[in-house]
Image 1 (cartoon, rainbow, N blue to C red):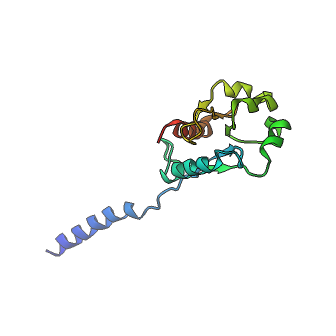
Image 2 (image 1 turned 60 degrees about the vertical axis):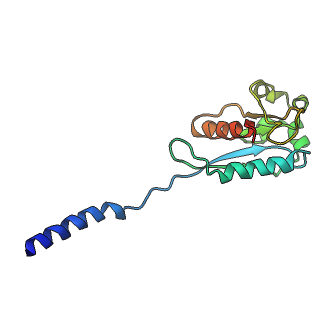
Image 3 (image 1 turned 135 degrees about the vertical axis):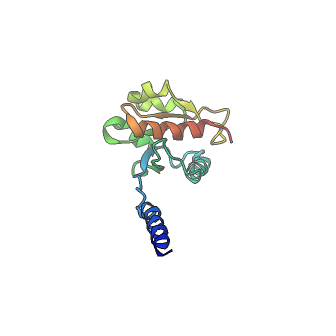
Length: 154
């Protein structure tokens, strides 16, 4: 009888040991966003970003996705002053396609842009959102996840 209790205690201990292992916490993938903080659509875009974040987005690897707006630079000034050299972002949202005149280096991205006018309640105006050139791996996947979310109607 005593042996049975020792056996059951040993089995219970072995079953409990793996449960004590600390879960690994994955480092979040930060999507840096360039946009005009003072555009007519800024308020609606703020809401869409918050909705995206509250949906608890994750990559298939389990890494969480976080969006961070770059707010150190004025929109117009940044577009006119060597945008690609001064600003490191993953996603760019323009007020309109015509803003590309000030930043011809972004023209290639505009051809792959998603029109998010419905997301920011700006239709029929075109509000292009696109990924910066040269992204790879998890940053590209996380950025595309965010742009796809913005492209969906509520």
